[in-house]
Image (cartoon, rainbow, N blue to C red; front, side):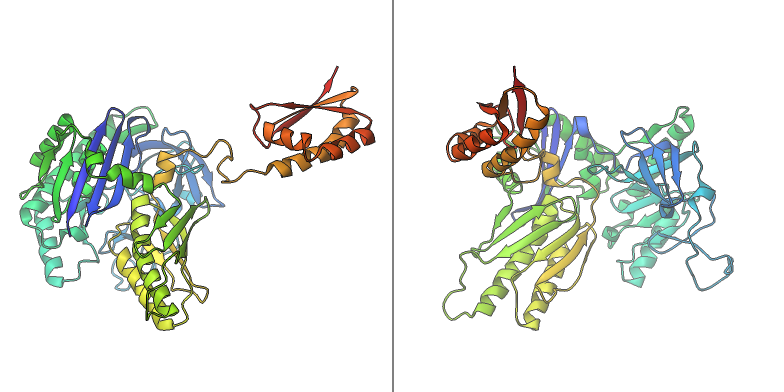
Length: 510
């Protein structure tokens, strides 16, 4: 599959688009004033311990305290074992060091291992999202292209997704011979089939990086303090996104081009990715039609080639995606069930693409078109599973229900595209709707008798939005006159375009 990366640099913003088979599958945005904190290592201070939640809040210098769950805490001196993927396995006290079967022991009580004012080294695992603070862990790690350095592990773990025993032995042997005894490494899935020189480049890069982190950590006197910050986006992609399938990396800034070439020369083994400096007058993202795809990514509606469509509604609780047939009728000789099947198959492939491109995470509900045949539901479900295999974010999904719904989750580590590029509408405050002029008018007619009881003066002045004022003057004039007679007051209406349509004010006129 054709794999290209386009890097657009501007004075205050960096954008990276990944294109696969002529579709933008991922869009990463980093702004100088809003740089993400995920991956950063901090020396923090515990501010609150919550036994009821088995968690603690840690001050790492951000606006809100970072959240540390007891399951994400690990003492530097804890006696732990590690699974093949590098995940921690606690032994029960009865097993000792010689027990063959592993059994997870209960998690320790947070109040017994952490206290307010205690200083700990933590790493941000999830960006602050909305009103939630950052999620942190004390299991510090540093990621490279093929390896992850895990300083507390002191052994070599292999990704479970590498199924070949022969390949696992080969990789473990190479990394074990290259690593320092005091450092552990996890071999990532992408390491399958890579050369020793690739692994050596990663070991040397990560070892040097960890030594610098350790030195800064020991030198820090004031807490909270940042000990390690992830590289800038245009360098980070060389580590996280580049693969053997990457045909070309195109960057439109001379300084960034030089920095990327230097990074590749220092830390990446041959064959190195091809990096091209884009110098044309026409902006890179316009020429590649990426700007157009970004605009489309902010729309609720996504058109399908068959004529159907997706409607994507995002809320704080979940994301709902509705599939519609639209103008697609299936053509001659095709039954309704076949038409629905074809639309759903196309829809789930597009849904998988939109989840990656828009970076939608959390709980997701897919409302597919109802299918009568169980075999067709199975076909659509398998098609969705296949499409999601290209997604690096962890996903879990249930089978299609009798109502045609699919419940799924996608790991959320940063803001989605809409959250990054948009603010809630100041008019509707993010609700997506306004109370109608008729609703506000009726509310005013209910409030006027109440106001007459506590607002003194013969005349009540009503300030309201022009649309509401027009309705009161026209269709509701008789109702208003009857109300004036009932409360024995005169109501003077003043249209004020500065007011929100749902706002009004009743005051006394001297």
